[in-house]
Length: 280
Image 1 (tube, rainbow, N blue to C red):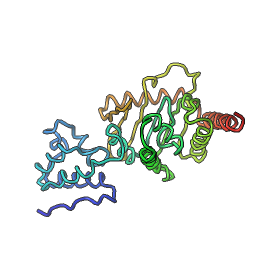
Image 2 (image 1 turned 30 degrees about the vertical axis):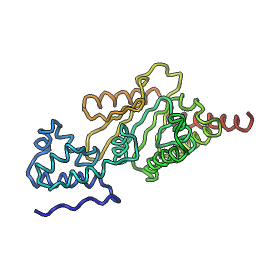
Image 3 (image 1 turned 135 degrees about the vertical axis):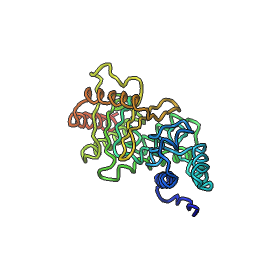
Image 4 (image 1 turned 120 degrees about the vertical axis):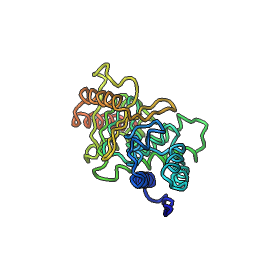
């Protein structure tokens, strides 16, 4: 049997690894369920690996090499692709985000990372890591801005943001930083690159008060949900749980201002910050 070539890191490596897995599985005449059963994972999880929406972990890769006779191909490439510029709790979610066709995101206190300006990101990272060097902060900011390049594509992914009013009112970095940050969000909304809703204080209690919520939809894989806390994060594919979180996001959308009113509010708050900077 011909030995598969190692993947080119300059391409889309996780998608290519998934394609190789599908090819090897089909060549072995195994279903997704049969390949996943010894690992106690579902056939849909194997499908997510094949679609490139989930990360292949070492124990899975070693099993695939053994069952599929791929001579260590998956283990070698899995180890090479495991290195990430993102924190461990977020790395897999960031990779899934890059493959998503639609992202729906609610954040209670912050402007989402995909929408952040360099100054806003730097202020956040400095507050998280007060003893970090400037080089370390710059590296973190660069990684976050790199994620934001998803929005350079004019249409994909569809990005629906529900932004709590608290994120507008908390002066991260001061008036100048906030004015710039909110103008950037407003610009993306005006260019119809994002769908923006603000969840106003007047909405009162709501379904998302427990924390942030991100839903990711894919062309050839089931819905994924990412929930995050302090230095923790969990990527969820259980259908019952993702359905429940989808309902939560729908409830937040129902309580949010319309996109037009949301844009007006963001621009108004940005104007207030700019005026405050000019007339402290």
